[in-house]
Image (tube, rainbow, N blue to C red):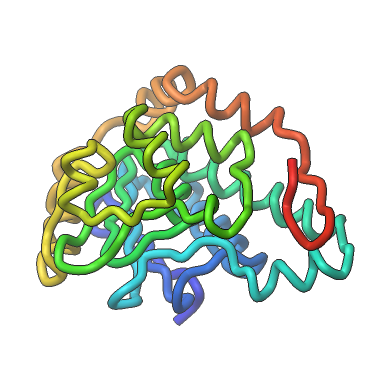
Length: 237
């Protein structure tokens, strides 16, 4: 079992994250990019679903245990390479040539919640798990590309509330706020997510063409984003 595994369920590629809390570090990011390369280049998959093997967590975002020592050591090259790779992962999920679904079967925090925003659709587990952007409480600002992804996925009032208060949203609250499109309990979310995404089998070329226009402003902002400047052990833009 690798950090990231994938399989085909008919025309749907199902990615499973096996990296514990699925925090973002270079190895995990590379494993995701490798999986996306394989799916796009060796299969005819026209839809994509991502789930987590962890029973309580979909993703808790940046691996600060890996990142902060790098930042504190003043290794700007490694830090910036990491953020460029993170942006690449954001864009690859955003622009996958098929419908994408984040099957959020547990907590999703910080960078994990931002990555969830890169998907076309989000389903969330109802009996456990919070959707949260805690950056305001841990003094890490959102980079422009991150905010662009959040704006793409979240209604304006929900974005302001979640970004400025760090509120932990339940699935019920996320449904009411338009953050996710459906919610199911633990024993149903995988099967319901897969059943729904299987109903969508659109051509790669037309989906890619629509996404090119639909998400072009998000891609522009990510591509033009200045590399983060690392100062005093904190990330600043």
